[in-house]
Amino acid sequence: MSTTTTQATTLQGGEWLIKESNAFETFTPEDFNEEQRMVMDMCHQFLQSEIHPIIDRIDKMEPGLMPSLMEKAGEQGLLSTSFPEELGGLGKDFITSTIVNEGLGGGYSFSVAIAAHTGIGTLPILYFGTEEQKKKYIPKLASGEWKGAYGLTEPNSGSDALSAKTTAKLSEDGKHYILNGQKCWITNGGFADVYTVFAKVDGEKFTGFIVERGTEGFSQGPEEHKMGIKGSSTVQLYFQDAKIPVENVLGEIGKGHLIAFNILNIGRLKLDAAALGASKYATNLAVQYANTREQFKLPLSKFGAIRHKLAEMAIRIWVCESALYRAAKAVDTKEHELMEKGVPFSNALLGAAEEYAIECAMLKVFGSEVLDFVVDEGVQIHGGNGFSDEYLISKAYRDSRINRIYEGTNEINRLLTVDMVLKRAMKGKLDLMGPAMAVSKELMSIPDFGSEEEGAFAKEVKAIKNFKKALLMVAGAAVQKLMMQLDKEQEILMNIADMAIAIYHAESALLRTIKLADKVGEAAAGIQIDITRTYLYDAADAINKAGKDALNSFADGDELRMMHIGLKRFTKVEPFNTKDARRRIAAKLIADGGYTI
Image 1: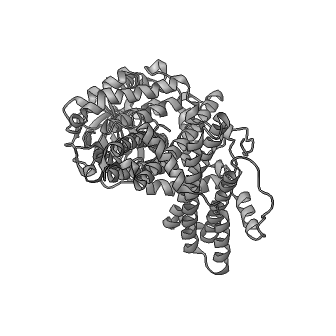
Image 2: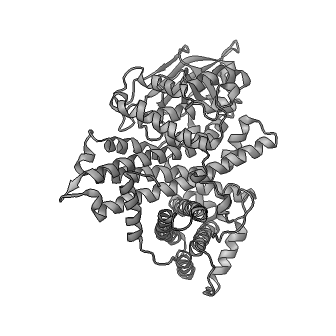
């Protein structure tokens, strides 16, 4: 049975750091209902029947092919899962829409096109549009009749989106805004019908606009030649005295940043979901190859080095999945809470995603880096064949790389993770001071080596508690020592973020395992227990290393020695035979012919 406390309510954003979660109230993929499982199956079937057989045609950007595939997806309801029924959607919950993103994640360039359409291409209008704008655009975007795109990035802006140079000026007759400027890296830009574009009114007020294809003064450049996701349309957009009707202003003048940043919170979680789906698909390719390719008269899957790789792929995928649906349920719950309080639908999900913006940023980093790891090891398992275009793993490898760049680079998301935690603390939304002071006092005390907690996962629960103490100690010392200079110490901030990301994912995996083991028994949950214990064992070293790197950057003398001792204490875990655990994990993948955990 579990040793977790009985926290009765859903934790708010960032509170996992200072409070315990109840495993039995934590949502996991094992909690999917029958309809949600059917939705996942439908997504997989769509990829198998409509996408995978014509991957080469998609990559060659056969004219009209991608739009037609998106229309087919629309016919099956895959473009409008969580849109309101009155606007042509299916009205499903946030978890179900997240499932769609995962289920279609293994579709290479198609996954990118459909994610851009259903996310940044449509959500700005759905959540910030007027009733007239929603009625005009959303039903056609939901069905796939119209395709959506999003114009934020400019050649010289990069991660600093608010430094955009595109301008908008009201015409003399007051009927149009005249846009001038340029946007780049616009996914779906070559065929979209509707674009959300950002410009500065009078060169100052950052504002969103709805721009339709065919607008006078609006044109696009040729398709970009990219390293990966070759089948997705990526172009530059040009505005030369483009006339945008005043009724196409999206949201309020000067409040475009609210659209850009709030939509990104949702997009980061959904990107994690898509990366998870792609990771599972790439792992299947690797397992199938390892089972059929022989060396020294044995299948590759018989060799320990290959089994280690397959197991590590599965570990990271399972941990990623655990954190994703834990966070997705938190967002879903918050959305419904807000709606019950009278918050309009158009604001509820945005408010919920903003509440969990810290978790969304961490998910994006972890999921994109899991996918990069999986496809890299997948190529390695394929050996020389993995470097050949004849094998799909090479395409997966190239397509993966973009995920660490868009929706905010992983560096930006790491910095945001710490920045948002500190801002929530300063606003009184997150009580970090009390727990941090408690950890400081504990450092000065003699360690208690008395009786251990009891329970099947007592040691793992204690490890998570101590990991959090390590993070509070390092972050608290950094804030106290560096104060207003901390924001300039990006290396330290990223060390702290890495600690936070590892801890959140380790805790998510443990909560899922406790809940599963209670339901089916420890023997039946043996593989999941192996995964969790292996990840926790490795996470301890990673947290220790990141913590030491941070401490060594700003502390010295007795203070540094004391905190090193504390860090060692807080990241100490019991010895564990990860080799045998990985062999058991790999054996399941090999026997099943793919990822089925």
